[in-house]
Amino acid sequence: MRLTIARKIALAVIAIVILCVGTMAWVTSSNLQRGFIAYLNQMQERDLEQVGELLARRYRTEGDFEWLRGDPRAMREVLGQLTPQIQAEGGPERRRRPQPRDDGYGPPPRRDGPPREAMQPPGARDPMGIGSRLSIFDNQGRPLVGPPDVPSGIARAIVVDGKSVAMMRLRPLRQSGNADANAAGFLREQVRDIVIVAFGMVLVSVLLAFWLARHLLRPVAALRDVTARLARSQFDARAPLLSRDELAELALHVNAMAEALETSERNRRKMLADVAHELRTPLTVIRGEIEALIDGIRTADPQALQSLHAEVLHLNKLVDDLHQLTLADAGDLHFAWQNLDLAALVAPLLERYHARASDAGLALTRSLPALPLNVKGDPGRLTQVIVNLLENSVRYTDAGGQIHVELARDGGEACLVIEDSAPGVPDGQHDAIFDRLYRIDAARSRERGGSGLGLSICKALAEAHGGSIAAARSRLGGVRVTLRLPIANL
Image (tube, rainbow, N blue to C red; front, side, top):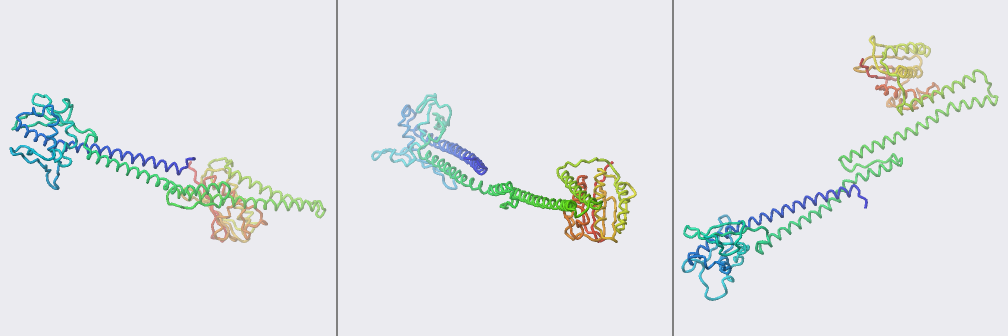
């Protein structure tokens, strides 16, 4: 039988309950026996005082204890006169004493009828077996009745007229078996009830333990099924929330992981389809140009070769971009880190694009800080990011528009803002333009060039520098792209 977690929990709970209940039952029964024996000994001390009174009366009658020496039957007659202890409710303990004889000592003698022992009330004849444990010694220490050796016990003197005439020693009870049948029976019943209750509690705990284990591990079973489906690439699997404890939090994390895997798988398939489409377009153009040259439809003039060269460059650019994104995902991009002035890096790039913006009918304005903004980065990679952003603005902004570039310090970050005029990006899609191969046909068409990977590369490089990049609506009517990089501590 395989020990599942449910069975382990159930067995652990059962073992703990058995240990606790068994210990409690053992301690309770032991305390009950000790307490009961102590109670019986206390009662026998009182009975011993009554025996002393009876023997003192008989001593006055006989004048000595020679009638008792070596005669257990005489001692049994004395013990037969003991009466049960009666505790009055709310008052002191009362004893029923025997009726005095004509001389005032002891009960009257019987002349006929049943023997004296038969006339004693139940429980009055040697209660709790005092006779077998009682020894009496005279003033010289010689035994009168009972075993001569009593190593320890209860000692009481028999006093007559203020003078000690003998000594009684009673060996105390050590276990319930030495008590009379009624006391021993009562104690056995109590111990038996404790054992029955303990056994019932253990039985109930066994049933509750198995139920509790199944109840607690029901969410685990659901999580096991969900993870098994995820392992089979069924990323639509979700774990139900069956509780509000740590297992529910685990179910939430598993669901989040499944959703992330589903999104990643969906993006992967979309990217493969988009890459295939992007590769197919230049390859189709190249194939058509070559077939036209082979069939003689088109002559191999410089214009035809220039068209083929442009498509090859576009294809090479797409492959290079995909390679860079793959390296970024794998963390294999190499950087030449150094402290540099971001303003000094941006200024010559703006000078370069000023002529291109003018040729496209755009007004390029800038606002750079007078003081240096030092950041830690790779000049080549940061140049690639800024060039991509400027290229997008120049390429996708309608003629007659404007581009504004602003570099400033914002707290502990260097903030580079590039915003342009119309056309812009529809609301709700600004974050999507950083997705791979994403295009908005109204403003990002293939006829204007680009593979749809430039902004994805910018985002990967910005995050590799410990910064961030985001897009929003521009006040000029187009797109506002903000690049943030942490200021270097020199």
